[in-house]
Length: 450
Ligand SMILES: *[C@@H]1O[C@H](CO)[C@@H](O)[C@H](O)[C@H]1NC(C)=O
Ligand SMILES: *[C@@H]1O[C@H](CO)[C@@H](O)[C@H](O)[C@H]1NC(C)=O
Ligand SMILES: *[C@@H]1O[C@H](CO)[C@@H](O)[C@H](O)[C@H]1NC(C)=O
Ligand SMILES: *[C@@H]1O[C@H](CO)[C@@H](O)[C@H](O)[C@H]1NC(C)=O
Image 1: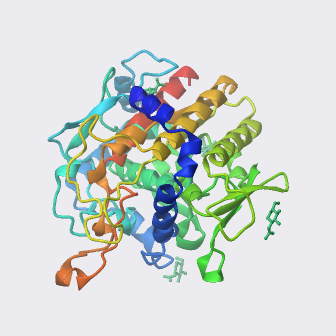
Image 2 (image 1 turned 30 degrees about the horizontal axis):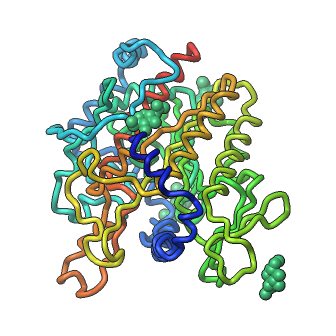
């Protein structure tokens, strides 16, 4: 992927990029505006206050295979849990790691570890199977790294790795999408117990895997830095960001967290005014203001630096792991509001789809900043979970129209069908992000000798 990116980069300079305003603006403004509600997720009605916790604790699932695993896993002595962990640690511990991002999607006849019908914590909009998505081919691909094996996700091993630890996902709806994949994967070994919830549409939630005293949480922070989200209902149709200050909603919690996964970026495509140290730095997609258009790439880099700086400051030299999941490309084709806006049912072949300038640059910023932070990180480990290329190859993995139940019932309403070509079906390709994430956590624990 490196060569593709570099050649692309050399021919597409930022100046050229901003001169070509019309094209990017169509892409980066109209589309995101139209999709804003996806990120704000008002589409699925919030469940009644007690419903999630009751369904979560209802373990009377008829999913025999997983209940067996669960029983085995939770009743197993810690020595057999060690075995599971040891099994995964055949390869010698190494840092820097094997490049899991260098690989391809290969056909796989096996079944996903979980089903939409068996996992209780899938957000409505990503529950493609339950919403009537007819094709199942997208479930039968595995990510195969070029130079190292990627073992299938082992839920008991993962829980063992985060025993007595707190793992937090921080960011936007992509962070939540990855969290929900992980919860479904882990739930096949042990039911998560929802122990805390707060915020509109449960933007702040925490689960406990009691047998392992393992805590997993999600914290909403679409910019990672301090910011005011646009509120169209109030006529506020741009975001305001304060680039030098981390968002206190996660920063205040992070000291108690052992493993942080940041995942964000899509909100940076929206109209925004940027402040730094009390001064307006410029804005993006802001014709109504007399501020300089500065795009969002430099600003995004500053935000990553601020977030990493904040965790470094708060963690000091503690044994912590900070992961940044890289930007995940959208796959809209044709008109975003028409049926089949991401109609593909198979992955792209390698080299079939060139990465867009924006996706490539967002990823590059994240990879570079993670490497930079790792250099000075001491015992705090920083690593990019580089999923951009593997995500790019999976146009078939999005809910598309199946973000809603049975979108084509009654002839599809005869008009516009809303499509989600940003988030991922569960189960789906995003489960592979967590297979790699497991390896990152495992290596971190080995390197720290824990
Ligand atoms: C939620 O649970 C609490 C405690 O179990 C109970 O007192 C309350 O009535 C429940 N609320 C609803 C809406 O079911
Ligand atoms: C991993 O491989 C990908 C794809 O070849 C490449 O783009 C990336 O730069 C590599 N990462 C590292 C850390 O070498
Ligand atoms: C349980 O996990 C938390 C981290 O989430 C840790 O602080 C605490 O010490 C653990 N409790 C025990 C008994 O190990
Ligand atoms: C916009 O800013 C420029 C440069 O600061 C200034 O010359 C101009 O008068 C401003 N226009 C308005 C409408 O405020």
